[in-house]
Amino acid sequence: MNREEMSRLAHAEHPIKSPLDDESVRQLLARGAPRGDERLLDLGCGGGEWLLRALATHPRLFAEGVDTSEDALEQAHEAASRLGVQERLALHHQDAAQFRSAHSFDLVLSVGAAHAFGGLLPTLAAARTHLAPGGRVLIGEGFWEREPSQEAIEMLGDFTDLATTLDHVAADGWTPVHGHVSTRRELDDYEWSNWGSLASWALDHPDHPDSPQVLETAAVRRTEWLRVYRESWGFVSLVLRRTAG
Image (cartoon, rainbow, N blue to C red; front, top):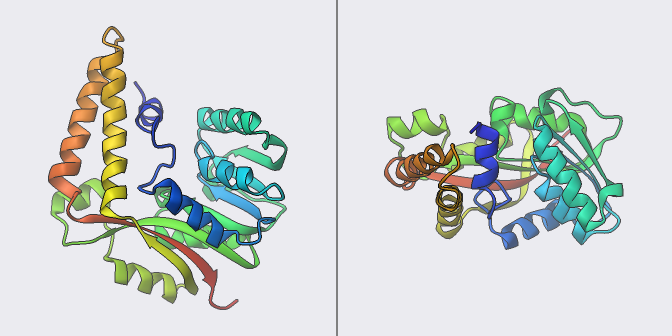
């Protein structure tokens, strides 16, 4: 089973692909798009869950999403049709780092997708090119809550602590106007949901040729979380405005 299909199964019960509960997502969108008539862009939208929730809540809002996964975009299109918001959503099958639009956007999102740009600051640089004057960026990024092991760094990446992460954001010309640090419950719920969903699929499909691989992957990923990074890794979501320029 390929990585994309594995991810779809893992997120079956947690369509927001970050450690955030529904209320945190709602609050972040409310802070990012306070008027309700904004134009939104999600760079690395996957199945479009952030955009779909914003569109369903605000009938005057328009949104665009960019992703390299044709299957994920098709899922987003089908979900938008079910919700009746498809006329206010444009989807682009493209590398988010290469995307260009004739529009500028009041809110640019990129939550948990910084790897597609090469890190936090390159992601902000990409977002800046799409931002309307006075617009906001909603970005989600990992950080180290405690000193990580070398194994954790090799597994997840070379993050910094929370204070240093915010220092880098400020030095790059951004001011946080809202933020949310994922709680222990959100972090744990996300991991339990991912690996539990994978394991459940494998147990429900014992005759499927990929079932042993999926079950093993769930066990390995659960062990890595519990033994390697659970005590050290955190996740912060920030709503940012340009400090100047």
